[in-house]
Image (cartoon, rainbow, N blue to C red):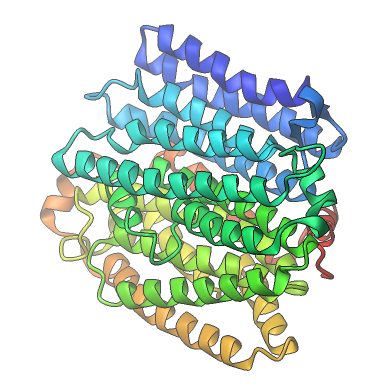
Length: 476
């Protein structure tokens, strides 16, 4: 019943929100749901044996980490959304709020799904749920971004469905089952050719949802046109659900003896994604699109860690948490800067630290965090990943990783420093937005968590990460 409640709570409250007549009352349904969902999540993570529907719903060790990240990130974004919607009273949130709540329900379903087909349905549902969120601003550019997101995402999810069919065919036996536990048990008897083709299709399919290069083409437009709170949930929540789906398939390949084949592909796509992001971040003039390419980079880091194996898996899982929380800092503070200057272009955004001191300062700190600067969390996970590359004698991979991180730091740094320094224009000083409690505290809280993970990983969280890495067959 606990897992069912985790999924049902946001759906029920979405229905309630849809019926409410007041936009202000509807907005407050978000933190109410977030508080309930986070409470249930903490209980579910501490009772991992909970199951439902004959094992179709359950929490495996990697799923517990993703669920915890989802719950925390959504809680932060829910508080922020209340403040954000107060500044957007010209637009009704009658669709926006219910879609955010259903998004939470569907991403929770992805995490809890232990059936290959059900997980695919849940991932597809997240695509349909987030499309109206990207279109919230009702502009020509936002409708274009929404259609691109739907078209590219639909191709990806179709390939993931084909890969699921191939994986099912590879596992045909006397007692056919698509439960991950059963697939793992019979992995050694799977047809290797069908399994390898299935992994390629699933990697491309779910990699499209993650935004791995070269399947990332929807990200710059979607992140650039969506409200900042939606960008935070896409970059820190949705992409990690797709990563979890890919990790589960990779786990089957490892159990079947095809781990070396799968790891080679993951390392290739990881380095490719980081390289593409680094190139496009140099000279980027739109700071929201810059954050989209940053997401492409860090999705590459995640699959690279898994591809390196061993301690790299632990580093990837830790980096998933660090990246998700840091993206909350960057997207929410960037949204505040966008409203203060009424522009996303660094040609018009100058002196952000003077115009909106809190948002400008934390955007700068978020830049240092996301580029792996100490003492923030991403530094720890990226250092662990680099150490794993050299320990595994993958010297070329480690050197390329270091070089690309430097290029990202320089490219992103030029854009960020141009934004936060200087004197704001007279037009920017006349806009009505100012930092407020509801739009400022979530940014501060997110960065505090990122700093905590850089200084000290709490023992219970470290135990979850080590359990998840061990479950995936890696030695942290």
